[in-house]
Amino acid sequence: MKIAIFSTQAYDRRFLDEALAAREERRHIELAYQEAALALHTVALAQGCDAVCAFVNDRLDAPVLEALHQLGVRAVLMRCAGFNNVDIEAAQRLGFFVARVPAYSPEAVAEHTLALILTLNRNTHRAYARVREGNFALDGLLGSNLHGKTAGVVGTGKIGLATARILKGFGCRVLGHDPFPAPEFGALGTMVDLPTLLAESDIVSLHCPLMDTTRHMINRHSLAGMKRGAMLVNTSRGALIDTPAVIDALKSRQLGFLAIDVYEQEGSLFFHDRSGDIIEDDVFQRLMTFPNVLVTGHQGFFTVEAMREIAEVTFGNIECFNAGKCSTNEISP
Image 1 (cartoon, helix red, strand yellow):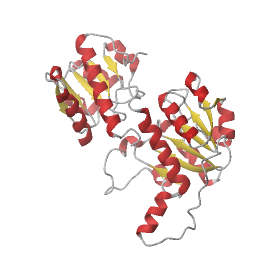
Image 2 (cartoon, one colour):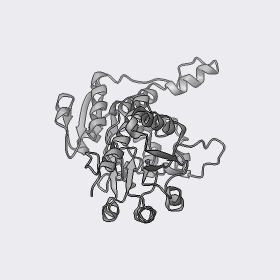
Image 3 (cartoon, helix red, strand yellow):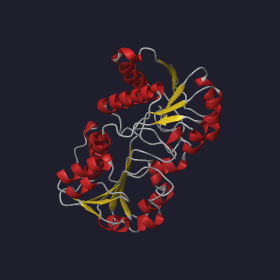
Image 4 (tube, helix red, strand yellow):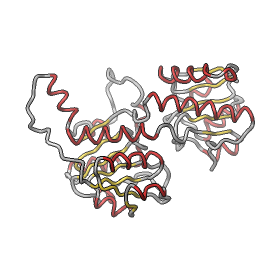
């Protein structure tokens, strides 16, 4: 069996090769690494492959799936939890096996969420730069205690629960919102409606899938309903946030702080070295001018434990496809 791995980075090779070599029964699998992202103009790179393995910014809309099907590809393996970039109805119509990695060390993303909160709150990124230049002044570095603050967790899946546990450990009052609340959240905080969570929270952390109902859930209306000066954190999907609306809220001081590990138009930016390029995304560039904004390049998942889990689950999905078995990780409309 041959699999085309799109959007490949060096770390993908490391962990997939490690998982491939770990079991003798996987030796018949050939991995064809492609640095290019999957799109209609790169489909030909999957020639001769039985499956493709894709990541968050690869395109798997109907035209791409139809082109893959014509090449003989019959399986789509997402090495991530999100699948908003896959046309599931088209995949089902064409008979594709589609599976994802629904949970890969939820603690990895939760801990990165707290790293963003703590960094932005205590200005450690600015302090680091100052001290390296011999500047030990404290002006402009004033933070506040997390203990006693109200933190709102929007989405109480595995990552949301892991985040809530950490926030509770810091002594925060934790509020949660989810149309399908996890029973375990009851031991961590209080479930409320979204307007209440936004109005009462000093920190709002998003942990939602991207769907029609959640796209731009943080918009001009919801931002106006937030506690003035609150912090907004997004380590989930970039399009949960209407970025121009967030910029206006930052300018008016309605939003006090913004920390994001994802960005709606990240496809042309993230996972690549753009330090020598002129970044033409004016919205992103405007975000970077705010001293109270912290951006990381979609690294919340990036731990050794999570990468190993992604590789293992991906190979488990491959084995289900080969055996003609159903997988609990299959995606259907």
